Image (cartoon, rainbow, N blue to C red; front, top):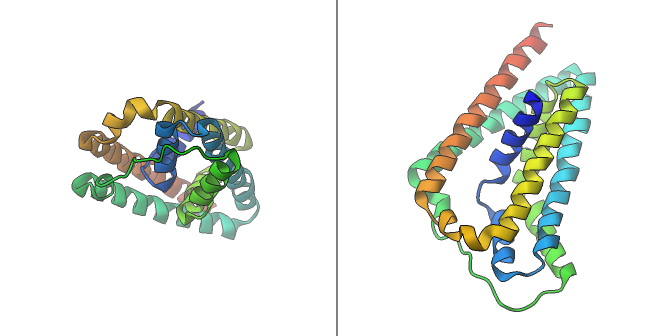
Length: 210
């Protein structure tokens, strides 16, 4: 159950950060254009990438000692970078200003909404670091049964976030535009990323001493 909660918190901390993908989903929600398909596409991408991270990268790490160490080190470095960036954003709010939530009232075919969502999601290199390296790196420290709980928690966070963002964005726009909201969010993300990094460091020490 602890792994399930960690899955929710780790995945939630990464996917909730405002960025091109989330702005795209918000615009879809505000315009009412193909919200279901946009949200489902985001979740489907997370499903494929997180599943690969947990059961491919995580399992390969179990087999290869060198790969295990490499994935752990990469995960730690990226988590530290992520934490530092979150604390920086909490101080200067650089990525919280000038977010464009405007949208066009023109209708859009479903396939175009899906393609644009795939482009916004998969052309962002950070999505692979988040879902494959970080998630896979943490999963490498878990037993198989724990990985199942972990991936279920991570996918639940993704499913809940994207569909809530799409369908409730019209009601949450004031919250998204609040500096105070993003200060608290960035501080929480920074602290949680440091906790996850510490857990992986402890696991890495055990691996190196084994």
